[in-house]
Length: 412
Ligand SMILES: O[C@H]1[C@H](O)[C@@H](O)[C@H](O)[C@@H](O)[C@H]1O
Picture (cartoon, rainbow, N blue to C red):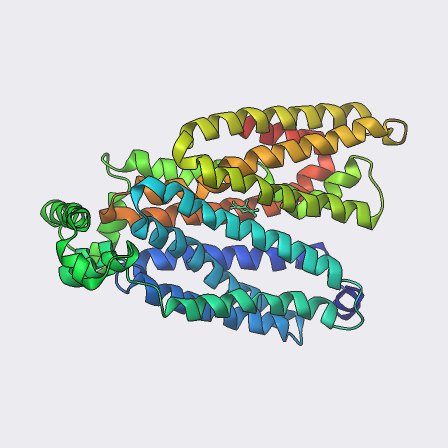
């Protein structure tokens, strides 16, 4: 990407700003959707989020100045944040309970597929002459954005939201579509009736206990405050902390600063460095596959417990190796590769546990009455923590890479 660096010879500050604006945009996107999600259909909200995302991507890809790029990332970030909140919310509402975990783990599958494609596109286009080297990877993100906005036109509306709004017949028909039943079968199928009844009971309970949102500023504030009621505070903490621990496990520190970390392990050369950080994406991608199969069979807790133990041990091993050999990696190449192997082990354990479950759990723990706000707050936690990691990792790594690894191992 010589063209990019000669066109805009940016320093550390601007680099940080470009990373931060996307994350802050995403934070706002997730929070705004917590306010708007219940007022409009999930489908329409996802469609608008896609349009915002595409506008941001278009601005980035056609950037003529650094400020175009920064603005494009901020707008794109709004779309990313909105989508990262709306997608699990919608998926949780339409999935049958017995395969909900697997279906929702597909979100992580899509995220890491994006990580892998993004990384390797950048890697392959980096030596193309001219601005195509960076405009192509930025343009590619328009593809999924456009595809999803077209796909939205065919998405069935969330039956739970329809029932919440008193549109029971439409709710039944949408449920029938989702469970692959014909409109005629919808009227007779007992299983559909039971599922709809469960939704109506949930709605009746909401109406009895808290009433339906009146859309005033006061009722909005009360709705957010409800998340911190004694009744829901545990769930709210699960959502927020699940994402806190997911982020502070160090996965993004590894993805963003992998090359620097790997240099601190003593490996040299652009290609080796990129192969190692690219490899981290691929391992995450492979690891999510067993998670999709086993998350409903084994349950969330065993995967999280096992994942935590392996992730923490891997970080401790890498930290010990780094602290022992960082002054003389040349003479200890086996130790250097062992350190890389333990980073890979961490990534695999993360990819089967905290990666997917981070996206599954928050949407499952909240009841419909507070679900959109709960998911919004949990998703906001992803973006705040993601932002903080981007901010502090470079400075901490300068002090000591092994210290960073020990610090994150204590979090996992
Ligand atoms: O689960 C995802 C995934 O693991 C990504 O690689 C990471 O960048 C995200 O922050 C995380 O939420």
